[in-house]
Amino acid sequence: MRPNKQKFKMRQILSEKRLKLPDSRADTLRKYPTIIWLTGLSGSGKTSIANALEAMLTADGLHSVVLDGDTLRIGLNSDLGFTAADRTENARRTAEVARMMAKAGLITIVALISPMRADRALARKIAGEVRFFEVFIDASLAQCEARDVKGLYALARAGSIKQFTGISAPYEPPMDPDLILRTADWTVSDSAMHLKTEVLRPTSLQ
Amino acid sequence: MRPNKQKFKMRQILSEKRLKLPDSRADTLRKYPTIIWLTGLSGSGKTSIANALEAMLTADGLHSVVLDGDTLRIGLNSDLGFTAADRTENARRTAEVARMMAKAGLITIVALISPMRADRALARKIAGEVRFFEVFIDASLAQCEARDVKGLYALARAGSIKQFTGISAPYEPPMDPDLILRTADWTVSDSAMHLKTEVLRPTSLQ
Image (cartoon, rainbow over all chains, first blue to last red; front, side):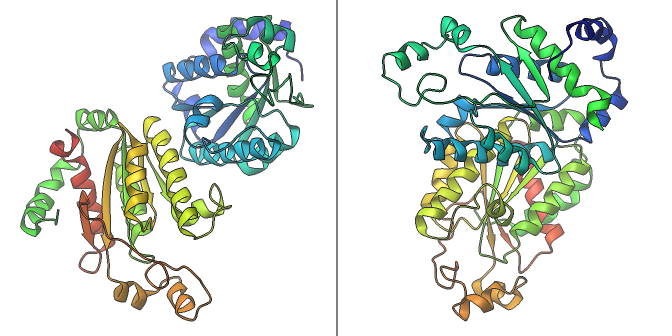
């Protein structure tokens, strides 16, 4: 589903009031354990959006947490590499932790390249009764490579990093994500605000 | 450190008021990310005490979570067996998740046999700057086997379960735990209350 720009603008205008979350609204959300799963290329903006969303939710008195792929690779997933099997295990463990955190009452925001459809499907399956909101952080390879915030694309092109998503390893865009955020068109703040609106939308909570 | 029974009784009398946790007290605790790590034989009472403590903390408006070894083996650690290496990995992953949860603001209660001193030392190391409160759930093998709540000891004695802690795999009691709970002498509720008092004691928060 592509976001409808006109609807989005209307929502942005409405959001001033709506996003203040009266208590009853926040209470409702607390009853819906939620995993917000951001997938996209390296450098597409997943972590920035996740952190911005967490800050907005915190400001609303909602308790959230970010599970970031890079950070997980220092800790829980430090024993895993970048083979297909290891990426699957990476997604599996992340989904298991996300499920536990969501069930403990945290709105759980995952920022993980998670390039394969099958791995994301596994994550959704692991979430079980926990709401799983899949968000495609849609930036083209050219855009991500042009930014190259971490300098990884240059290293991947030079062959210094193997199995790099988009260069020497595949990325399968979601077929039917719950939301698409085109980060080339929007600021981080706008993207996070739009995401928040969509996640908190009453109809999406049903 | 063995709990001093007389001090404990005094604390129990005082606790009526103290454990109601005025806001400032709860706020203080929220500033101290904490992992409460319960170690002990199968059937010693880890899970019961963890759940009772969680209920007490919730009643005080404190946000906590239980990471239970049995539950983890269905999910995150479902790929692990009971070899020494797998038990180490079990403890490592549990500690990594506990650290993330504690840093996200949850009082994190771990109920894990974690039989080896080295594995518990690794867990403490992983906790890093997060407070790590090690609790020995002290019930003798004879007591646990006499209860045999899950029927596992009978299976282990019959050889149907291999590498069973206390029967066919070692258990190393903590040398210097932060607290010892003798579950043969105390009810679950008393144990949990004592644990809560110790964990929340101002001096232990320094």
